[in-house]
Length: 349
Image (cartoon, rainbow, N blue to C red):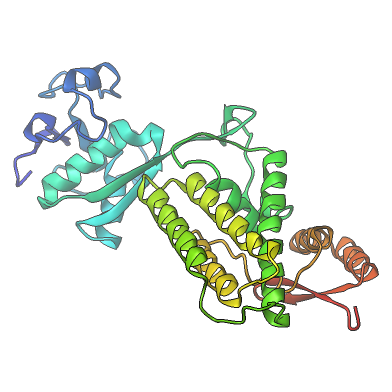
């Protein structure tokens, strides 16, 4: 109101969208287009139908618990105010990234920008990232439909890293159809990446390097790995394209495995690729290195270890003990660490 971008109507306060010249830039629509799909508050005294409420006067009979004193009388904040209030309190007038679902672009985020910038006279957020919906059988996941899962329920079956991989495998703006087969595929893919890295670590430990013991990568390998790391960075710079970035990780693993197809494996090349892989994986929050602790473990054994961890998460101790015994029968032991289960061969295996 001090900046003359809001006005009072009785006990209400409205934002004047025509007093804010940038209104509509986020949704990239004109005011006439916005008006056709607006969530319009019916008040014929408003200066413009798109003007939205910053403060609403209490109505007779409303509970006292949902009204507060103000210069305009008893009332409550408008629908959009809470997000601006939280952002300005915890992040300041200007911050980097603001997220939300695609359905919030208009009117919620458009109004959030308008009221924040009109009050502070500073840019609100640098980047807006709007995510696609999570669906189940191509129907939007929501509490009202009852077709949703909590993270604790999902983690009882799959490690958090598997869920993270699944989410990263789809662009954040694209819809994600939740299904157990997608999670299972993510688990197997993640296990494959870890196994390849574990084998390379095993080679480093046992020093099986033929004629090349140098700690420097071979020039062609160093160049190829460097290009892949740049491609990884380019993918994330391009609207956070995580599926493309994951594709680059797999190319790095293939480059790593290619080193073992020759009789003269280069220690420096293997170590260089592993370091580049670690650097990229950490950007995505994917722990590809600590689960196997540098040892090659057959995929079926790592799968049993992951199943046991899921059983422990849901406190199914009987099943966890059974799986531990199954792992033991195959010649391995499993140790529980803060970083997750650690699978090791039995002594003498």
